[in-house]
Length: 195
Image (tube, rainbow, N blue to C red):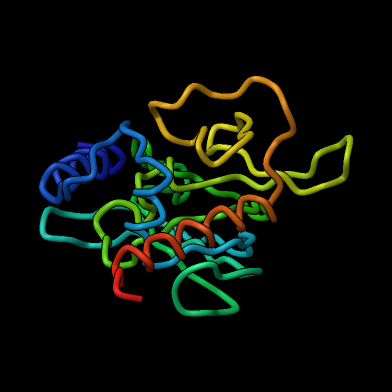
């Protein structure tokens, strides 16, 4: 058996054996993203490093992604964050894992992270907890898009059951951050109703 096939088989066995209840392909609501994340930050990818790791089923490829943190919306403030994902490339061997986000140097994202989840991806909802930050070529403003690049015109339109708004301006980073802050305040007030 070739090294590539052995790594792919070991990864498949490992993924199946560490299923964590996160359902691949089902997008969480905006409320679930905010509530389930222990850290939410806006950052830029500054380093990627893939390595072959040994686990109980053999060897798998993991990639550590380092982010320069611009803004922390939830969790401990930091100037850098490092997240580990199953998959990556070492030489001519690549392990792709469905719905695990892939990054490149210079990517800017707002990420909803659950640091306790170390199975496949620490991102809440896998790719669904990654929001791309891009520069609008017309306005020059930073706007937020879904992981696949589609437009977001309101936080409510993030929910899977919502009818996406087709018209109107895209959500800016500042507007998106304000929506997260508003939702965090709402969740805090629900937990302490006597105040």
